[in-house]
Image 1 (spheres, helix red, strand yellow):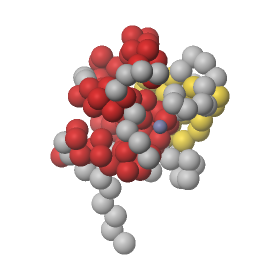
Image 2 (cartoon, protein in one colour):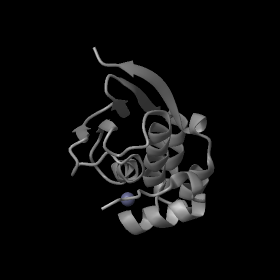
Image 3 (spheres, helix red, strand yellow):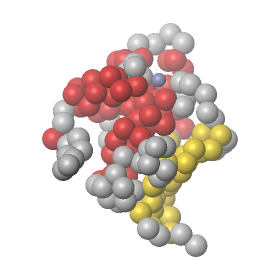
Image 4 (cartoon, helix red, strand yellow):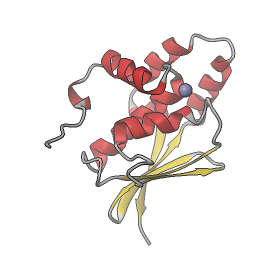
Length: 148
Ligand SMILES: [Zn+2]
């Protein structure tokens, strides 16, 4: 069977938010942050969900860990395909790689702070939509990574 994966390049941010929410169960800012990370990795490394691998380090507690579902949804690196590994801990970082080359994405402190400050009282769906529209450079730092 020929499988065509979702065409994120030709999907509006509204449509992507809708599909993320259907997959994950709600639309939240961390979910969207993860989705943006996955999209960036896919664009930078490989569009094939079998060629890309991810290693995530973060505290494994919602809402922060909602990020992981966003990453799986857009990058194609998933627990089930065994090309995604998750470790509980700090600092938060997400390594994506293909073969021996990769990138490490580190969320900007400002964006984590902004989400954290709104988690209790803010409109999280609106914040999620705002994050979806932001440029990658506003969301995370990117470092090159090479397998030793
Ligand atoms: Zn969530």
